[in-house]
Amino acid sequence: MDKDDQKFIAVEGLHAWASAILTQMERLDLARGQLAKGGRYRRAYLCERHFVLIAAKKLIDYIDWARDLGFLDDTIFKEMLRLRDDIVDLKGTNEHVIEYYRGTGSHAEHWVFADEIIVADTNPMTGKQIGGRLNGDELAKAATSLLNALTRHYFPGRSF
Image 1 (cartoon, rainbow, N blue to C red):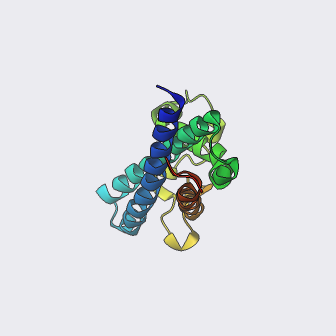
Image 2: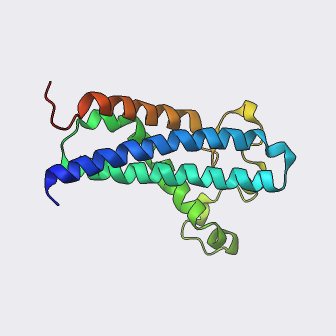
């Protein structure tokens, strides 16, 4: 695939995964509102939280690719990259939750909240922390900022 095609696919991925973050944050907010009902609602919340982390990590992957291609101003990625370490760590931790509970996770010290599955984010008045450290509002703001910047910085076949 030539470099122009890669640029186009990279921008499509940036749009898709930034939009997915916004969609998943809406779903997570709805699930958070149902936590008091317990049972399957708590489990639905955990799934939605994981889906947010998947979308955020995929966006980081596309940002890395776009940066490697070197066709966009790096400043448009600034807000997302500030959240990078927490996104990568939390997604990895969530991905390997069984290993952590078995005591075999590769970074067991990162599994700070042994009972997080029960108590994290149960009170929407305390903010929207994912995994106790990634602020959901900041994540949504960073995704929105990137989407807005893309429309200003990349238009295939158009010059300014």
